[in-house]
Image 1 (cartoon, rainbow, N blue to C red):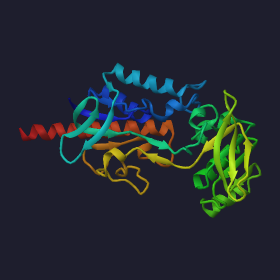
Image 2 (image 1 turned 90 degrees about the horizontal axis):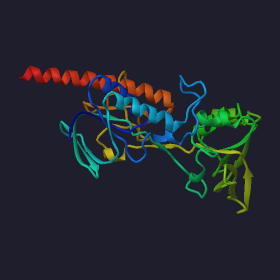
Image 3 (image 1 turned 120 degrees about the vertical axis):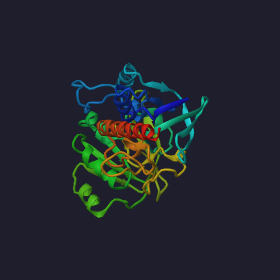
Image 4 (image 1 turned 90 degrees about the vertical axis):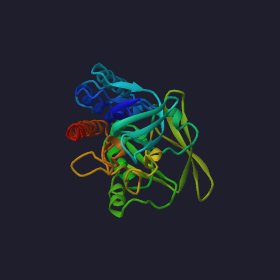
Amino acid sequence: MRRKVVILGTGPAGATAAIYLARANMEPLIIEGIQPGGQLTLTTEIENFPGFIEGIDGAELTNNMKQQAQRFGAEFMNGWVTSVDLSKKPFVLQVEGFGEVVTDSLILSTGASAKFLGIPGEKDNVSRGVSTCATCDGFFFRGKRVIIVGGGDSAMEEAMFLSKFASEVIVVNRRNELRASKIMQQRAKDNEKISWALNKTPLEVLDNGMHVTGLKVQNNETGEVEIVETDGIFLAIGHTPNTGFLEGQIDTDEQGYIQVTPGSMATNVEGVFACGDVQDNKYRQAITAAGTGCMAALDTERYLEELTFKEKERV
C-alpha cells in the first residue's frame, strides 16, 4: 500500500491532522493502534473542550473526530506498527497483521502513556475515581477528599490545583523526602488543604463496586498497613512517550519526547512530523493536542506540495 501521508495515532492530535489533510484531498491513512482514540477514551466527561456547553464523553469526542475525518475521505486502519524505516524515502512501515505500508510523509501522534503503580484495583477503577490528570478531572471532586500519589514538581502542581476543588488533598509518597524543587515543596506545604502521608507505599486501591473508597498503604518504617479513605486517587508519577518503536531514528529529549523544529511540527527527519502528547511533556491537554495536530497537518501539506513541485522540475 502506498500513501502520500500516514498518521500514527487517533487521539485528538492525530484525528485533527486527519480532518485537515482529508479536506485538502491528501487521502490520509490513519493507523489507530491498540487504543483507538488514545487516553481521551478513558475520560468519562470532558468539560473544558471548547464548543461543548454540557461537556462530552471522551470516547464520544474522539469518535466524532474520526467520523468527521472519514466524511472527507480519510481511511482508518486498526493495526499495530511494529517497525518504521526512516532511513530512505519513501518511508516503510510494517503493520502487524497487514504487512508493508509505504508513505511519502509521516505524522507521529502516538501520545504518551501515564505511568501506573501496578497495584490491585488501580486500572479497574480508572474513570471511577482513579485519574492521571488533575487538570482534566479535578473539577469533579469538589468538596471531596482526594489523594495525589507522587513526589515531584508535577505532583506538587497537581496537589495545589486539586486544592481549589477538594476539601482535603493528601500527598502519598514512597519516600520520606520529596523530589520536587524546594520552592514547589514550600508552596504545597504552605497550603492548608494539603496534608502528607510520606514514606508510605501504596498497596491496593479499594472500591465499593462503583467508585474508589480508599488506598491501602504500608508504612515503610514500621511495616504497618493502613487504609487512607478517599473519594479519588490522582497519579502523578510521570508519563512515558510512545516512541520505542522508532528505535532512535527521531531526535528526542532525555525523557523520550520527540523534539520538533521551533516554529513548526517538523522532526529532524525531513517529511516526518510530530504532534500531541508524544512531543508535549508540559500541557498534555486535548485542546492543545488538537492544535498541534492542525499545525502538523498544515506543515505536511506544504511539504508534500514542495515534493510534488520538485518532482515536476526533474521531469
